[in-house]
Length: 186
Image 1 (cartoon, rainbow, N blue to C red):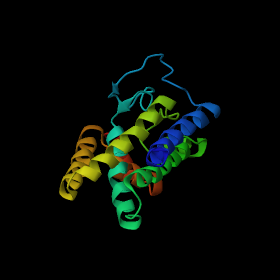
Image 2 (image 1 turned 180 degrees about the vertical axis):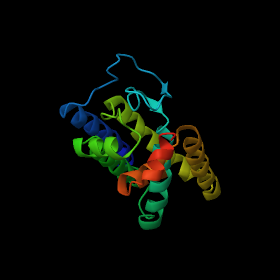
Image 3 (image 1 turned 60 degrees about the vertical axis):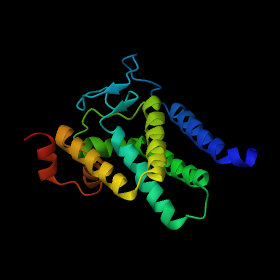
């Protein structure tokens, strides 16, 4: 019984350790505004990435899709639970790196996230859970549906907020002035 539950316990442990670490380094548990919202839709706001979900939540679901595909390719013999544990560890590591001072400053310098000061711990936990949802969906959906959902999520976020996972990665790694101007609405 414990052997069957071990991957789930590891996933929960990773999430709890990530939250504990972020609290230990001084990240806000919830939005400084003192409220908890299920959805915060204003991107250019000090409350962005502070609540349960926002316009960047779909990118974390996409992480789950991508992690499922990558782990299916390289670790298909592992059980679903252990592949999910690996994906959760990777997502948690990204959240820790993303909330480091160096990456926060990088976001502020080269993306539209001028008011970004790091995620709340609540938002980090919700982002990891969004990845878990994406991982689970990818295990259940046909590949074409997963690809369609990725394209839909990216298309909607690019259309509505001029940002998304692909643009976020591009601007972190190789910032382009033309993209920055377009994102700023200039």
